[in-house]
Structure formats: structure tokens, C-alpha cells
Image 1 (cartoon, one colour):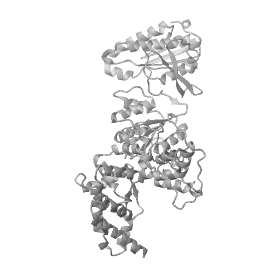
Image 2 (cartoon, one colour; image 1 turned 180 degrees about the vertical axis):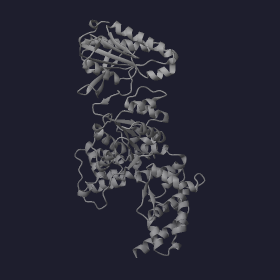
Image 3 (cartoon, rainbow, N blue to C red; image 1 turned 180 degrees about the horizontal axis):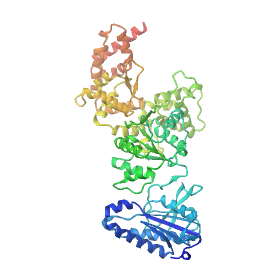
Image 4 (cartoon, rainbow, N blue to C red; image 1 turned 90 degrees about the horizontal axis):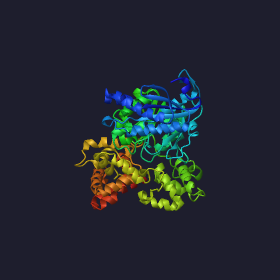
Length: 598
């Protein structure tokens, strides 16, 4: 080929190469040479049919120049169709990625020395096997008039381009259409979708997490379902995206029900080819030289696999960092855990001015006004809203769902409806995952992730009306199906999974539920017909220690004070099974009241 055979002026360049060629070589061995030559023959047919001129052929790739942009894109379509129809040996499909870009260029010594060539190489680097990506410069020159068309895939930051580049995908009969995200950094530097509503009440947590994130770090946002971990993580990701050269990438594991698919989920998010037996190795190769933040959402769905893969990722890829949201930590070296608690709630004596500064009330107001702009927190309304927030323990998802009810209910009706909390806490917001459209759905998700013994413990611990000790928990939980010695570990596991909290304010360590979780677990206890037996077992244990005949000193008074709400909550349940035990509990409560008020 002589230099004059190559087009000059406004030239359209096509680059192609085989995706996963190394893996293909390992699988085919000596047979790879025949496959490579057949691939070259098929693509050359496409190039020559539409007037393409080969500039070079190296390894498994082509560099081709065209005078006409439309012909260049048609040649790519023809090449992909020929490859797709070919009966490759043993089903080893040859998937070729192609990139097309146009610009001013002139041949020199059987080659091109032009910026447009380097830019075309960047376009192909963003493509996947079977995909044809076209730059905006080429797309503006193309005129099809038939079944082929170009569809936008977004704007991306590519090296050798001064500004973010709009990229288009070639679509039409005989061409693959579904691919993972483009292998390039989006214009915004992330693949996060920021919710349209305001970010409320987490500024200190956001600042803390941002200060902890850096190359090689792993930060876990741990907390119960509905506490706002995902909302916080997305806000953090958007804020820090510009500080990571290769961006921030979200991997949602909520619907990954097979541990072996976690690597595929990561590969899809960061744009690493199609699935295969060595997908994780390909992901590590892709990320080894990059500086990016990976955000794993809903890590509890595959916690063991996450722990394994993230440990390896940070060991192999020095420029990477991980942000994880989960109801339980990974428990791996280097993990920094930030516990995300419900939003602060106003105290019972808060004034309107004080209440409106409470993050939980601010969240309620913001979400209520989104649907009812005239909603005001006046002197009549604020006590009710404050009580709603306290009743919901400051849990953001519950507050958001309830606040949406202000479109059809006044706050007093909402408060009354919380007696049937799980019936009220539902939303039709289709922007939320199904499991987050009701509090029951969210808690069902958590419950299914527990072992059978953990499920037993969660149900039976709901018998408590307030905080409880591990000794009391052992009495409530242990029976023929759960061993006494196993109960402490079960309690601690439920704490790890953010279904219970720890209270260090009383005399010794005690444990407590969010009221929303306790009511959910209590309904499960009732459905399992365990409420009566558990209550009776616990009531007798309390009477052995706190019965009225035990009254002697301040120690008794203090112990009753600590468990007073638990004793009160047991009385109506036990009364239906053993009136004498219930009367003895009432006597202890009455004696305590008389002594403490004396």
C-alpha cells in the first residue's frame, strides 16, 4: 500500500481488537491461530466492501482509515454481523470491540501522525466485545437512511480529548445491543444517581467518612435497614468524585443472590467485559493501575464473599478504596466502621424552635412539604410531629414514608395510625426498591438473611418492653431449639447485624430494639404461637429475683427500676395464662412504686 492510497483531510478511523484474546488463546491453544486468521478474513471483507484502507494490523487488532464516515460505520456493522454468524470452534465466540472517530489527518510514511488517531484509540478502549462505539465527531457526519442507527450512551472523560466526549453505540439488526457500562469515566465522575430530595441531618457523619477515605482504605457504614446508609453513601460519593482520577462506582448487591456473581456485579459496574471463569482476575487487572472509589451497597446480602473479594482488591490495587453499606461489618483487616444511628429526635419538653432544629423533624418537614407545600409547623402541630418522630425512633425511612401521608392525613391521624405501625408504613414511590416501599419489606429482607437460631432469638427477644440484660435474654430465648450457651452469641450477632442496639447507660451492658423492629419481631412471635410460653418463662425468672417477698434494700429497688417496663409489659400477657404469676408481678410493681415515692 502506498501513502497515496490512504485518505487525507477529513478521515474516519476505525480501531478493532478481540476482547479476552489471552483467555481465548489459553482455551484454544494451537487452534487460536486459525481462529485469529478467520477473524481477520471476515473483518477485511467488511473493510474492503465499504472502501476501508488498512493502515496496520498488529496482533488481534486492526487500524483502518475511511474517506467516508457513513461507510466506516457500515463496515463495522458488516464486520460484527459476519463475526456473529460464524460457527466458531467449541462455541468460543470471538467478540470484537470497535471504536470510530473522525478528524483531520494526512498520511506520512504509510501511517498517520495525528491527534485524531490517538483519540480514536481512546474510543475503542471504552468499548466491549461485540460493541461499536462512535464519537460525536463521526456521528455528526453519518447518514444511514436504513435500519442502522446510533443511540447515545452518555458523556465520558477520555484522554486526548479536551472536553467530555458524547459517545454513541451502533444498533441495528444482527448487532448486540445490551452491554455493561462503557469502560470510561462518566462526565460527572461517577455512576451514582443522587435522589432529588434534600440531604438532611448527616453532615458530621459525611465529613467523618470523607476524612477516612483514601487509597487503600475500607470504610463500612453499618446500621439498621432504613437508617439512611445508602443516602449518606451516595451523597459522599458525589462529593468526592472529583478527587478520584478514575471516579466513583456503585455496585448494588441487593439482588445478587449467588456469591459467585459478586465479581460479575463489580465487573459490570466498572466496565470490564463480559462474564467468564476469570472475571475477577480481569477486574483486578483493570483496576490495578487505577485510582477509584468502589461503593458496595447492601453488602449484607453477600457479606462473606464481599469480605474475601474486597480484601484481595485492596491488596492488589494500591490506588483503590472501598465504601461499603451493610447491616453488619466485614470484619477484615483495615476496616474502619462508622455506625450510622437513627436521626436525633426532639425531647418531650422541646419548644417549637428547638424541635425544628432536630434533624428528624427537619426531615419530616422537608418530605411533607414536597407533597403539601403549605404544611407548617405551628404551635398546634409541632408536638404531634415531635411525637411521631420519637415514636419512629428517628428512623429516616419510616419518617419519610409517614411524612408522605400528610398529603391525605393530618398529623394527629398519622400519630393515631402508628398503633398499627406496619400497616401505615407503606409507600407507592416507584423510585424506591420494592423492599424499601414498606417497613415490613425492609425487615423481611433482614429476617431472611438470619440463621434459624438468629430468627428464633429475634422473635423471642421482642417480648421485652424495654432494654434487657444478656441473662434475661437467655431465659427468653433458650429452649429445646436454642441452647443456653448459644444465646449470648446470638444476641451479639443481632447487634452486629444492626437489628438491636447496645445500651451502656444502665448498670451493666443491656440491649434494646428500635420500636419499629420490636413491633415487627413481636408480630412474628405471635404468629409462631410463642408469646405466652416465652412471657411465662421470663415472668417466673423475674419473680425469683424481684418478687415482692424479695424486697429488702436499695439493690432490689434499683433492679426493679431497671426492668420496670419489662415487668409491666409482661403482666397482660401472663394474666391470660397464669393469673397468680401476673398478680405477683403487679405486687412487685406496686411495692416499688410505694417505696420509690415515699
